[in-house]
Length: 223
Length: 240
Image (cartoon, rainbow over all chains, first blue to last red; front, side, top):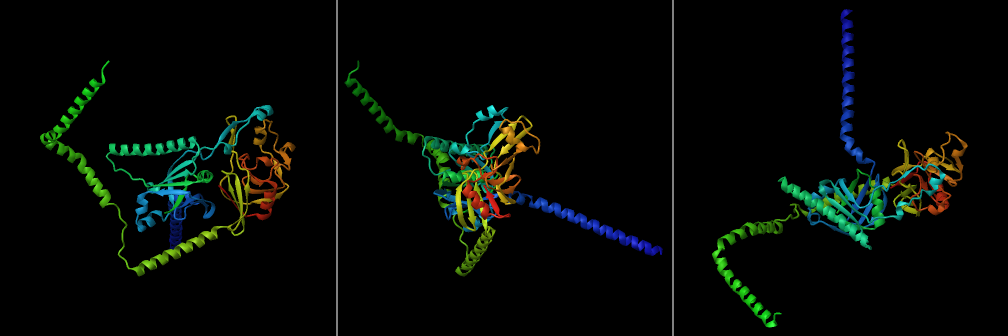
């Protein structure tokens, strides 16, 4: 009798131990998978910019559905990218590239702050102008993983203001590069080479694409 | 005042000096040959080496030692993979009607599969940040991403939220006060995409094409009727 009780007790202990082991295993699995999938989940829901230089198109995709496409009027790519061997190209561009830094002459969200009027008289005087009536020249630089820089420019620069903005935009990029190079010299560290792809496209499309891209965006590039 | 002859004389002297100096260069070179060569070596030699590295040792395409047959089979395999991926991408596109809204240019496109049924102007969020003191603020922007039609309404009634009164400088009435309910301001139809955002009509048709809304999407009457009849509950709406 005593031995039976002790046997059932030990079987109960083993069962409890097994359940606890399985539970802790499940918790570990869930936490590991959460950690492992977190970077992927960060980008999963977002829009992707598809730059297809082979077909001279740029498109915007949400969850694989193409929602906007425009033709590239003119583009130039770095000699490094022209000479890159096919296996390296496949290795480099077979996965979407996350954008690590950006610079633009237009704002992503043209927010206008308005304070609530105190009465109806003040409300009627509170006039504002919609953003589409005030449009700045659009120049955008996106730096992706591996230091690949994609510069998107408006294709028409009719006014002096456009040229000035373009000059300032490029000067800022070049000054940044020069500063980084100087810092590397001072630190005795290796200089970094940044291949550049420059694309000219219609300004409305550029504005729409830039404003649609979220902060954590991905670029699919086809050379 | 000096005469022209004086100037010509001075010029001759200068020319003679320059010629004398030029004649002396070989002597100078002979005299300082070693330091000149050393300087040239220090400055020019690295440049020559760098030039050789750039021109001769530049990255060249890697040629794989492979026969044509295996190359062809690899190409065929890649082609098959691309075709499979294209099919996968095409499958993601909704087969029935769906709506795409460009909030930057205030345009909408009604698609059926890959075909555009209607493309026209619409109105989206104004990006106004309305502040009421330090505690309350509202951002009037159209959300971006993929949405589904939650429900459809005929002759919708607008229940004005607090910001509608604050924006007009009016006192905010109680929750279900009759002044909150407005008929026919949203047009004949409304389609909800969730979180209180609607696709609806407007009384102010002249503002269509401008970013003037509080986050909803406004269409003119014709377009609204077409969109309402085409999109069903569950149909996709892409906003960017």
